[in-house]
Image (tube, rainbow, N blue to C red):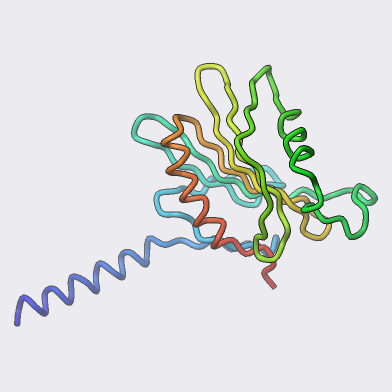
Length: 181
């Protein structure tokens, strides 16, 4: 009986500790919330248009970041009723490949469309060859009202590290709420 009581107390303590590690991010100002993945740290002191930035390091020095950015769209820049899903895959690819900076090579892996909390987004996966390393990206982009939304996973390291972080990013995306009241 003593062992059973000890086991129950241990399980209760473990569950309360596990729940205490779970962190939620809420920005009423930006009407966004998300669950911060275990093992990821929230970075403070971010740029004005970055709503949330998370970081994680691997045992072999790899790095991964998740960022949620909202940029105001100037009046008249998009047509009323514009739906980002109407962009062709070729247009998405050209936009990403034209974003190469400092002579890097951008290799598009895949593109597609999704909906995050009711907002139409396009997504792309790409690999960028940068000096001494490879940068992997998984990016969602869309329009929320008068704001351009970018949700980005960047991962510096090998493909296995990217794949591991991509599965965590998928869970982050599922938790993301973009229309908080």
